[in-house]
Amino acid sequence: MKKYCLSITGGLLLILAGVILWGGFNTAMEWTNTLHFCISCHEMESTVYQEYRHTIHYTNPSGVRAACPDCHVPRDWVPKVVRKIKASRELWYWATGAIDTREKFEARRLHLAERVWQTMKDTDSRECRNCHAFTTMDLAGQGRFAARIHGDAVGEGKTCIDCHKGISHHLPAMSPETVAAGQDIDMEYGEEIHETCAGCHGEFGEGTPDGEYPRLAGLDARYIARQLRLFKARKRENIPMIPYATERELPEDDVRTIAAYLSSIELPTRLPPLGESGFDAFERLQASKRVVNIARYAGDIEAGGRLYAKECAACHGRDGYGDRRRAIPQLAGQRSLYLRRQIENFRKGKRLHDDPRDAEIFRSFPDSDIDDLLAWLSVQDDAVGGQGDLTYLKEPAPAR
Image 1 (tube, helix red, strand yellow):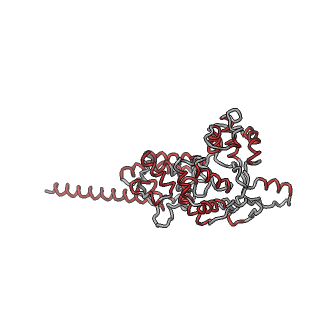
Image 2 (image 1 turned 45 degrees about the vertical axis):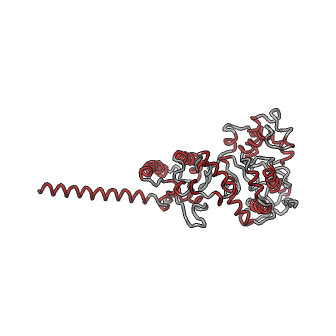
Image 3 (image 1 turned 135 degrees about the vertical axis):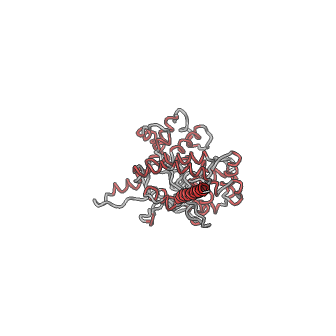
C-alpha cells in the first residue's frame, strides 16, 4: 500500500513537473512571438521595424495590425517550433554583430530577403493566408488591375510572395550592372553609345519637358534593356527608334551596356546650395543641366494619391519609384506628358501594358482620373519642405 501511494505521488509529481515545464516552455515561446520581443535588439528596431511602421500592415483604416510573428511565424505548433529552431541563426547574427549597423545589414539584405522569400514560396505563403485567401476575396471591390491579376493567379496556381515582395520592407538594392547583365559592364563604352541616344533623350538622359522623349536616366536597367529588345523585334511601335534598334546598330551586348550606363546616371531634383567659396555662374549653369524636377501637373493630388494606392502601388511601389526586383519602371520623376501619351497608347492597344486585357481597363478610367494620377506622380520628386523650388523648369500644360 505504501509503495502504491508513493508511486501515485511520484506520478502526480511527474505530471505536475511536466505541466510546469510545458507551460514554461510554451509561455517562453509565445513571449518570443511578440512585436516587443522582435524589436528588442537594435538590429531589427533600427532597420526593418522603421520600414514596417510606414506600411499598411502597421497602421490602416481598419485598425487591424499584422505584427512580425503574424507574417514570419507559423500558427500551427509543429511548424512554429521548427521556425523557432531555425531562428537560432538570427541569434548568431546578433551575437557576432554581423548586422549591427545599417551598412552591414544592407550588405546582407539581399541574402536575408531571398531566404525569407523562398520559405514563403515553399509554404504557399502560409502566413499570408492567415489573413488573405483567394476564396474569400471580393474581386469586384479591388482595384481593376488587382482584380484581373488575382483572378489569373487562382487559375495559374500562383502564391502571394510571387508578386508581393517588399510589401512591408524595402527591397534589396541591386547595382545596375548586376541587374542588367550579371557581369561586368564597360561604362566608358556605355557613355560612347549614349552619344547617339543623347541627340533625342538629352545629354544626361533627362528626356524632354514636352514628353516627346522620356527620361531614361536612373531607370531600371533590365526594364530599359527589355524595351530596347521590343523595339528591335518591332513589338513596340516607335518610328524614331527604327534606324537605331537593329541588330547591326545595337547588338545584344550593346543593349546590356547602354541599359546599365543609363541606369547608373543620377539626376538631382534641385540645385545644391551655394558653397562657401562663392558663386560661380558657369558651374551653376552646368549643374542646372542635370536637374530634373517634374513640374506640378494640373489635377487633384489627393484624389490621385488614392487612385494610385488602389491601382498602381502594388506594382510600381508605394512612392512611384518602381520595383527593380521585377523590372517594373518608376513613374515618379518621369515626364508627365510622356506618361500621358503612354496611357493613351495603352488605351488604344498600340503598346502592351502587362496583359492585352489592360487596354480595356485603361479605357475605363475617365480623363479626370488620369489627370489626378499624374498630378500626384508629378510631386513625388519634390524635396521635403519644398525648398529650392525650380519654377523655371516648367512643362507645358496638356492640350485639352
